[in-house]
Length: 311
Image 1 (tube, helix red, strand yellow):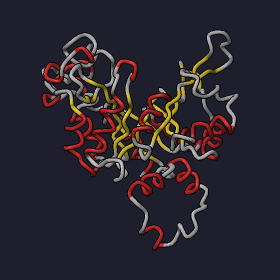
Image 2 (image 1 turned 30 degrees about the horizontal axis):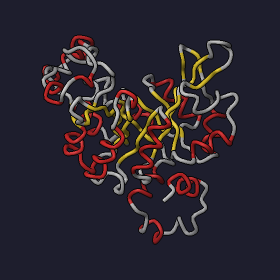
Image 3 (image 1 turned 90 degrees about the horizontal axis):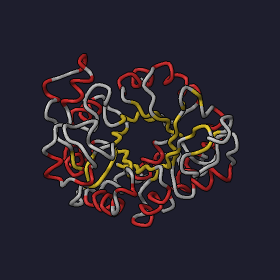
Image 4 (image 1 turned 90 degrees about the vertical axis):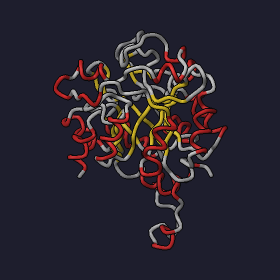
């Protein structure tokens, strides 16, 4: 199945009889997931990471209890090849250890405290329950929430995690996440997404982009990995090139106080079959502005704030 073609057809209303009860009843879980991307998505960035230590069970449980659409997380590999849920390339910021995450075995990573730092940095949100929180494996997250949640997983720093795509797809297949419409895989690295597609072309992919001013010309915006031109130069063909393998695009909204995308960017992406998810939006005013601009979803550390606007 070509995911991008399916989504585009659905979004343009080209499926004959799609509105009928019979057709809807026959929709597979994966097709339903893609259909749901037409609606607004609340994406809990590393869980409810504004209220609990990021990427810990406490943060994911909080977001899940609030009934978010997706639990967002980063996948990396331990030195012994286990898929762990952690954002940074080094463990210094959010644990009591130091050094590159890939230099540690799972057993060594499990011995770290990934919660106390949050209590020290956020005394108003501190909890004794956070102290001593362990780094999660992807298996543990899947076993805890199962098919009651949807997961928005980034292949983090693929160049530092050789074999990550193979290990991730293996876990997705083992836990029946793909055919049950439970997962999106995101990355800034196009090659990483294409590798996932080669391994299992039913995995819905999200191309992440990051726009910022060019060092040569501050008035011109460029994209971090050159996967697209800057927003002022992007064409339908550029969006269609992404839609050839991805079902959506994830983008920043602000760079160093400067707005980098607008409503025209969002609508042009949508016209080319790509819903737009914007990261990482924590203030209510910006949430409202982006919803008014037509964004299809927002990544946020404070999903409770966003849910108040959606409900």
